[in-house]
Length: 423
Image (cartoon, rainbow, N blue to C red; front, side, top):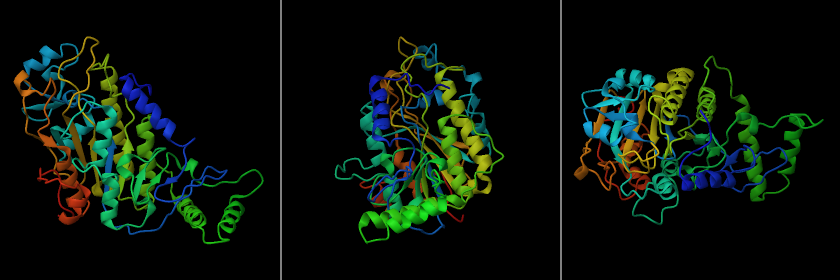
């Protein structure tokens, strides 16, 4: 699949800005401390070791606007085929989940997880306020604090604060820049490859000698940047214990590579409590969306195949991992003149893992009749924060009081998606 986006100008600009704001090359970016880059490309900030008792909550960011209707198609809807004559499946082409919904055929492994009770799907879900702006809705999605404009820290960082962790690796994003969801007072680790953050021999200086030189250089006084440098050296040295051995072959996509790095850390005992993985697919399909083949079919194959590899790779860790997909909005019900789909509102979410009460689609289905839409969009009937709150409370071990700080001003309801820890 091509890594070039064909989406709207706003999304392309957002992608370019994301790259510009990122670091030159892939470096270790430990948020929350003073950042100083040395010649090796290592970026300094505070790091500390915390406990290893938490479940791993993985947020997959489907930035660009995933079409939930194509991923999880409502069955028996003649109106869908009227409004999407070129980009909708026949019911018989889907992987039937129940009498109401069917999966895209490229999500075969998701169907296996569904049948095994390890995948739940939430449909007609989304943000409470949809603007159809990638920038605005992505930012709001990751802050998860609607009607609270003073909140500037992301929901995953607030989750880390509630856990009391002091381990910089408790929050991890396998990419080049800290996502908004992880920005805040808790330090988090951000890097795309172990090759980018491990100190090795430099010219004729051996690695051990180079590390000693840096330690001495940062031990002369108690300046904050020197303490930060020493802590980051410790963090980098911890990563040397990470094994890259695996019998699993990941798909050769950015998403596959990111999940592979996450798996390497998890299998080596790095104490990650929450991770944020950017899907990096061609989701903003304003033209030539495709259906059985094409852009969206490729997206679903990428998601399916990478998750399959990840599950095989992490083995029993899957039993204490909960994966949630998030997208800033879905697509409009009606295809456009270019056989694409413009920005909409509601979409679908996948909740996967060993602690999931799977095998069901949860939806307050609004219907597809004209009067049931909002300005041509599938209506949001479930706030995505219901999903996050249940996952954080029952799989993340968060108290009701802490949950009120993580998702301020939000009154959640259980959807029956996951089991409680220890149950």
